Length: 431
Image 1 (cartoon, rainbow, N blue to C red):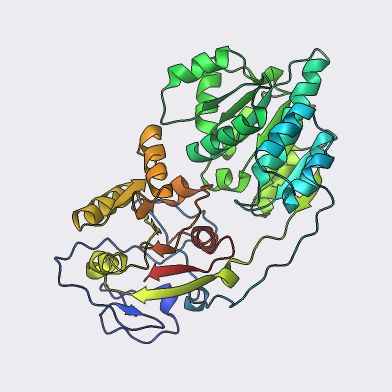
Image 2 (cartoon, rainbow, N blue to C red; image 1 turned 60 degrees about the horizontal axis):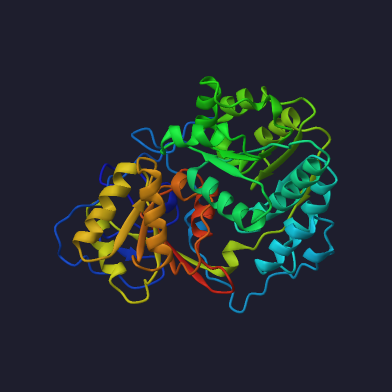
């Protein structure tokens, strides 16, 4: 298929020339519905070698992969390899009140990352954990670190922990999980992220909380204002370090880490293990124990297909699809903040209940949108890659790539939001 400007779509290397009508690669054509055209912009297929993909805006570069990678039939009756844990949660040598909180949350058998990481963290060793979102990694560091704070307090030492994450949403999710584990233990936390008022965060820091959970930019701002002194923090967690690297936070990360103790306890979690990640591990950790867990095969649980559609008909085609009853909980990915906001507005005008999350929305509005989607008060959530990173939303029936992602890794992260809990998901990509 060729674009209107004559450039060839990199996904269509082996595909036949399109007739110009919306066409699902392995299914029948869909009608455009005859509504006025309000389609989104297409973007360049050329990637400069050696450069990191841009995350949006006019310099955005789409991923270049074979079309075959976007078409896949889920494996019928797929059963993931069963992991046999070495421990149960009651086996871990943690504070009894903490253990009671763990049990009250319904935790019985640890996930692979929890089973392998918790004992090592309890021993005070640095850890590199390679695991995706949805594997239970948050509990794998919160449980042993809460126990560490309690035991250090009993010894007369007030332990402080920094948890650095790429996004506001992930910070909030970690704090929510923290509340459940730390209930009635006398341990407190504060979240410091951009997009929210700084003064409440400053007040929270002045209470000297045991856990500070924040994004690199806001952490650096607070350090420069002398509201955050990291010299007394003995432990640091770098969660989703690969995403922080992708988002351009590497210098902020190095700056923040330089103010911490040399003999600190460092935990490092990433979904991938690239050369750049290995370099960070060498900089930040001391003789770490490596834990890598086999994650589910996304391709085995998600039906993947493409829809060939002219740019001018993208919106109309999407509206037609979303009005079908099987599209009951849909995550739509767009390229830019402005485009995502506009698309959600257009969907609402077409009678489809939709909301959006992106970096320009306030923290409160993003949380409200997520809540509405999780509770099925809206059927469609339109998101940018960065805003959706780290989200764990159950029951997503479809993921639709309205705009192509920057990398194939971003593509797999997107479609991994569906096809969970033993269900087959569906992922569709507009090209």
